[in-house]
Amino acid sequence: MSLNGPARVLILVDQPLLAETIKLTLNHAAFTTSDVTTAAEAAIVAETWRPHLAVVDMDIGSEELINRLAQLAPEDSVRTAVLALTRRGDLATKLAAFELGVDDIMTVPFSPEELLARMVAITRRTFGSPVPIDPVLRLGEIEIDILHRQVRAGTSELHLSGLEQSLLYLLAANPGQLVTRDQILDALWGTDYVAESNVVDRHVRNLRVKLQNDWRKPRFIQTVPGKGYRFLPTFSGTQIPSEAAIGDPPR
Image 1 (cartoon, rainbow, N blue to C red):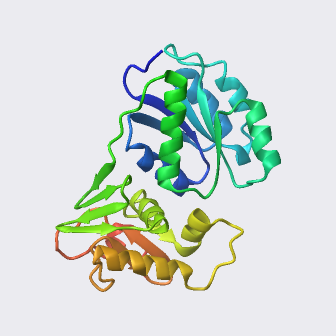
Image 2: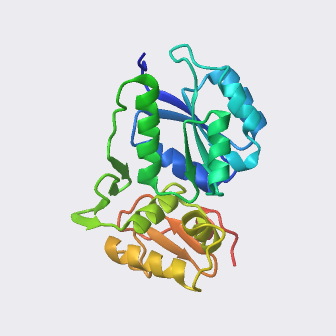
C-alpha cells in the first residue's frame, strides 16, 4: 500500500494561530491540508475529502469524529491515521486516546520539528513508504531549515535554539497578523506556565538579534506597541507599511 501523490491531512483545531503553525510545518513534506474548527465541520470534510491522516484536538469533543474517521478511509488506505493533540499530559488522558484508536498523541505546546517527525513516522507506518521532506522553507527573503535549526537571511546563516525556532514558526505562520504576547505565551509555554513579565519580549529580542533585525527599522519582526508582534513576510529595504495600511485601526 502506498500513496499516490501528497497525503491529505485534516486538521481539527479551534485556535487559528495553532492551526496555521501546523499547516506551515507540514509544508516541509508531501502533505496537503484542510483545517476546520469544529468536529461537525470535520465530519463533513472527512465525508467528502477522505483524508489519509488527521490532526485532532482532543480537548474540543472529538471522540465521535475519531470513530467516524475509521469508517471513512480513502480508497488507497485501509483507514485514516490520527495524531491527537491535548493540553493534558497525564497518563490517563493518553491511554484514553489510544483506546479510541489514535495512532499517536502529542501534548500542546510542541515544537515544529516534533510535529513533522511524528507525522512522517505515522505516514510511513500506515502506508509503508517514506514521505519526501524538504527541510527548507522559503518565506520572502528568509529561509528556514527545520532539520538543522538554521535560518538564512540574505548572506547570513544563523543557528536557532528550539524555542527560537518555535517562535519563528508561530510568527511566520501568521504573516502580517498581530500575534499578542499572551498568544505567544500560550502557544510556546502553555496556559499553566507562570511567566516572568518580560519572558516573551526577551525571546523575541534574542531572535531579532540573530536575524539582525533592528526593532526601529524592522526587517522581519515588527513590534505593535502595547500589543505584540507581527511577522513581515518580505523585506526589500523599503519603508515598512504603517499600522493602518496593514489592517490595524489607527490609534
